[in-house]
Image (cartoon, rainbow, N blue to C red):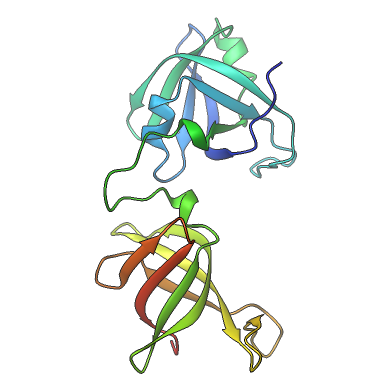
Length: 199
């Protein structure tokens, strides 16, 4: 079996069989459809707990023979899966694709997975100030939103997490739109915005 790539990204979940010829149905995660449709190899993982992915669970590759959209889902034919019973056995598996297999993004477009872990800077009285680190990217229907785990610098310049009175991490939700996000520098893992650090 081929070695498991170290850059796998979860893009969807198998929801069952499609038709009687062994095709599977996948519910893609947000912004995962185009990559799933273009990839010729998917990696599958059985979830340890139903409904929860485990990036450490064993993964195995499947060759994608054909795939297409079907409403809000993706359906596809996989090598070696020839009937409905075999397809049903894959229900619940998470679907992963190597990041190296993603098609190139257009100018001013970004894969959400590439934004995770970037340091975000915001505005404080016209000064560019550390806001925190991108923990997640969510879609609110109109646009993407960066969920930023708040950080601050102490007097010695060390980065410290910002916590509430109960010791929980503070976060900011930054709309990922050009009005608020001015620079995305992926090589340096840096995002500059005008989002107020005091919100």
